Image 1 (spheres, helix red, strand yellow):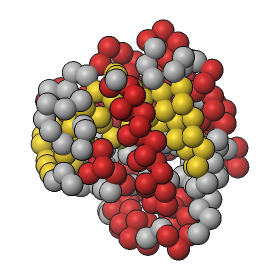
Image 2: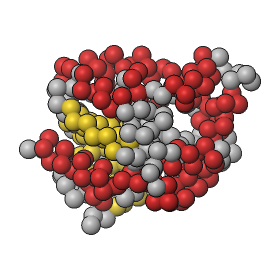
Image 3: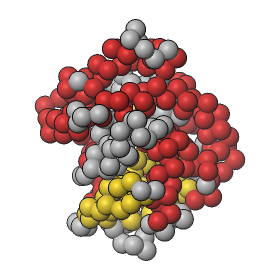
Image 4: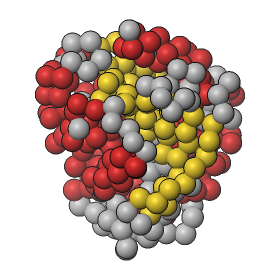
Length: 288
């Protein structure tokens, strides 16, 4: 099994933590995590992909072990997270790479693809939305309300997402046997989200999420015109991004492969081997 290296570098004056594994001269894949986690979510997947790839998995600013400047000193938006990720990859010399995106990692990854379309060799989306179809209304109604009118009337509903119970729900909802999901996952995330000032960071990104939706038509054009292979491997029981969000990729990507798995939002915690199998077969086909 490949050794995983844990590194920190400085990007635009901010410390960015990332995990790296695999041969330096192998095809590259970049793993972009979602909310409320970090590259920790990929801890078991990285060694499996590193047999054939150079794997890079950063923590977004404000998450995991990366720096978390206060929301008063840094404007947290998905554009800003994509800027830092792009510059990190430039520093690491990545000029061609596949993207694996989940949740928040998707809008960051879509921005990378739209800025540098010729760098993208393949897209893997694991419960990472790129279509209006994917939004589950019962979850997103409060987020849209907060983004449209931030204030005391709308903030409590989204602030509740920072609680231990809400984070635990993200991990276990839709999982047929929740006992297979380690409590370490939500306890790890809750501890980091609970750091002083991190609530303001997360609220800023909740407010900004609505600005990802106008990107979708540009993403669809990219998929139609650049022939990038797409794998959507998705927890079919996800009550945040529903399975329609996975199936929608077949509308625009000429080479789209969809697998709906009997799990939830954080599929790697319950179905690591299934997901890894799909991803490794897909990437082998792309390389060939």
